[in-house]
Length: 312
Length: 246
Ligand SMILES: Nc1ncnc2c1ncn2[C@@H]1O[C@H](COP(=O)(O)OP(=O)(O)O)[C@@H](O)[C@H]1O
Image (cartoon, each protein chain N blue to C red):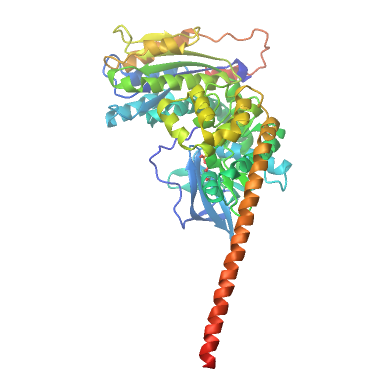
């Protein structure tokens, strides 16, 4: 829902500032801003030597409801990190008046486009498959994620594990999706309602695939507005989507409306990705061996030269 | 209980100061007296929303017991949804706060955060279930010309959002100035399904900005119309709570 702070107002907190919750009296040092959106601001904070993420808003209901859902998810899915872990919910006095915040686990990671840039586009199906698993677990709890988008996914760089942040769009099945982003919203594309249900997330996931494979498509859409048949044409004729056409056709003709069917369509793509990654890994290995020899060789030559000096 | 309550709202979309007819702030004050909330979205880009315009936007919403927001055209769709939902919830929150003060001597903000979450959840649910009657009042003065495609998109989007609410809704669309030089014209009334193709043809930017008369017309429409209520729902004794709202 809405935030009534005018867009030009100052941020709630300054770096280095220490804040104290009005009810629970916990103290947090502000270490920097992680992001801001329609719904508030997210800061990296520390308390007793631990780092956390703190989300603050002038709107109590948004913070309360988001906190409640995260808490609930934490309860059912212990250890399986469905959402960021939750630590505190409190009020704080700021220069902008009373504000409301909750404290959660700081999820570290790179955003999806950066990660793909570094590790190669063959990681796309792997990331989407992980999101499928994620969504399946959320759907089991009776919730739709709603605002699925690249900015709300963070990947751990070493292990390639995806986590979702921003649960502001998470909506009980059967209601109107609380928060959404046009590009990912099937209703905006004229492809269905904005009702919170499994197929809503599936459509968003398919748009995330387009966004990751052909990032420039979204920019051109901004000029012409939503035209789904044009987008379809672009996908059909674009060589980058060569292996993806089966999946997209499934989304278009209604065969893929569940996460399970999307996962199935992803699996051949994932297999191919694993092959590619294996090749890259083995190439890297061979190259390392060769450079190792080079290093060892040059070291040996150096030693020999050095010895020559000593001997003669 | 809230299923028997109809929220009444006017949503005014404008990019400039009124310059014709009655005073819009007075019109909004009158609407509020009849239990109608007035929300205003001011669009900034390209238009002539100077500081007088901004002040008027704010003053109308304040007098009308609603909220105002000044945004760029691209944020219009999202903002229209947000102000509508926000005002529905605010109306319910006010009634809930009144009850809370009687029961516990504090409103929701005075409750410990965890308890407040339960209230927030209830208000959120009730807001979704309440019936809503909405008149969208669109400024079609000359300066709005370039923004009308965006406005049409935003109205389409608003309808998508209203369609997934649990509560019933009825929406009407007015433009000011009217299409034949009159102050206001009704593009779609409550009983018509807003046909966006018709709307596309109807929206032609021209003339001055008779904001006051447009709010008055919307107020008249809202005070005449009542959403049909299912007759079989028994009265669950919360009728007096409803009285605060409508
Ligand atoms: N737990 C978290 N750990 C790390 N970064 C986060 C966390 N939560 C949010 N962020 C960052 O902050 C940004 C904005 O937060 P978000 O919850 O999306 O706000 P809004 O709902 O207002 O858009 C996110 O896109 C993300 O980059």
